[in-house]
Image (tube, rainbow, N blue to C red; front, side, top):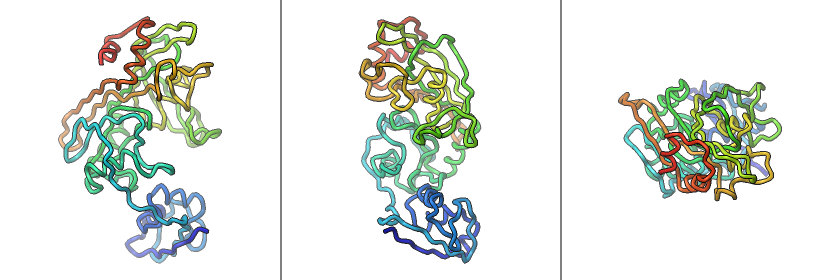
Length: 335
């Protein structure tokens, strides 16, 4: 049976959000866990379930129902290899390997990028602008099976500045992806809001429901590969993000009927899975270019990342079917 703990708010707690108070009181291992407990009605204020956004008053008796194991211990650093492309006292730029989850989730408490960052920089050497101990250093994310360049903030000042720059679309984030089918136009813009899929809470979809948020992606065709009877062809595409929604490129490419090759969630409606044909063990999506103004110095920072070996080999497998190749595509093929 779950046990509960009661904390009485002091004058210094007045005005805090309820989920923040519960997390800081040690009832839950992260702010997201505290928010979830509020949503499930497991946090009572004055004997009644309360919203995570409710503001705490001095003298409030706040009862938190805990899991049997109680609050989670602070995250530990782990010696997970990091490919660091740049670092200083304010920030770091890394190339994340495929398969590495950015931060802990329900079933993944360790083995994440955050664990690796804590090992390298220490918990005190990372920003905590998201207000959660399991998101130290994180200002934006890549999906677990998406590889490539990521920003990490080491101070709260840098974290706030970088998150604002991302929000204002001042950070240049470009990805390369291989998608199913032949995209006819050389360039395009996808302006379609994204929301949680009401039929499957693990996925997102294009929609205009109450929770939908604007999402804008532009694309440029880099190379086209003709079909051969087994498949209907492929297109190598550069995508530029103007917003940062969950699974944005994957959702938008599926929306225009050209899903990302190897995507296990937003997959093609075909009889065969291209992953096995191309020797892929994951989705073909790589964050290859990152540009931003340094939050402390104002210096323009530009980074580029070549394709990992598995993605480069998949392109090589298709080389004989190439029908059009841009200069940018040649650079990827040479990597």
